[in-house]
Each structure stands twice: as structure tokens, then as C-alpha cells.
Length: 124
Image (tube, rainbow, N blue to C red; front, side, top):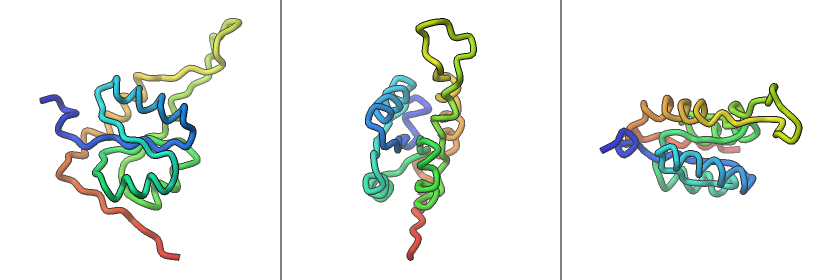
């Protein structure tokens, strides 16, 4: 049994479909089970139905996640770095895949399946 097999999956919450798919694929190839949520309704439903160890999202969505749960959050945008040695016809930024997966692993390691999170709901 691998370390990942005894832990809850990762939830990816990104509204952009391409970004959502890419993040989930990076996690999958890095050995994680990744579930997806594209909007707030899907996020709420996922948190009600399943246990997660970590939530991967973007800067603009961190507040929404924090309003619903107290799980560790990994901001995927923190791993998009400027390509300072960029030559012509190369992208302006690069993605630090290794750093991203390491951060997910670091936060994931401390969240075994037996630890349930309690969604926090705010009543207006």
C-alpha cells in the first residue's frame, strides 16, 4: 500500500475548465486521486459527500474555500513562475510541477482518512 492509498483524495476547485483538467492531470500523474469542482455549488456538494485531505485552487477562490471548510489549501498559482531566461517563442511563465506536488504532499501527509473535516457554513 502506498502512502497516498491511505489518505483522502485531493479536491481541485478551479472555474476554468482547462486549468481544472490540467491540475487534476498533474495530481493524477503525481500519484494522487483528484476530484474536481468547477463552481461553488459543486464545491459545496463535494465537501458534503466526500472527505478530502487538501484543496487545490487559485488565489481568487481561496476565500470561498475558507468560508466552507478548514482543510489545507494549496494555491496552484504560486507555482506559476516568470520565465526569466526566456528565449524567443518560449512561454512567458513556467510551472513548477515538482514544487507544486511537493506542497500537496506536505499538506496531504497530515490528513489521514480518519480525520473528518467539518464544513463551516455562514448564515446571513
